[in-house]
Image (cartoon, rainbow, N blue to C red; front, top):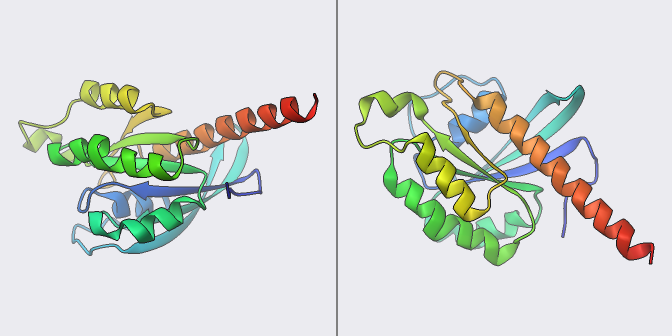
Length: 189
């Protein structure tokens, strides 16, 4: 398992269907302006710094293609991260179903040990849609897929964006601590 060696560096992959706001979520934490246009992503990287519990962390964010037929490229990248940020749009029920039926199974084929943070994007659009996904539905799916946590955000108004990445750091640290404890137990016998 290849993971970041620097305890203050976190490498994460953003996955989810196309056109649900993954790139906007990545750009929002880096301070880039929100762009309402859509440009299909094959793979983009972003870097950001974030303070969590008094420590400063460097985030390396890999925004991967939401097109299902790019699976070979995506799964190669899965091996080099610490955590998965699995996204769906709060106003796109099909993207929610894809989390359960496509994204989580694809991730689990490669690695079942790395943590997952489930994120609802585009929450600012809920007021326009009558059939939006509720917070309770998101929490239920997070439990069903074994996610570390569930977070909601809007890159357009920046609501919850920092919280997403704080949870990414906390989940990564918890996973590293658990892995370190396991290694110590194995080698102390």
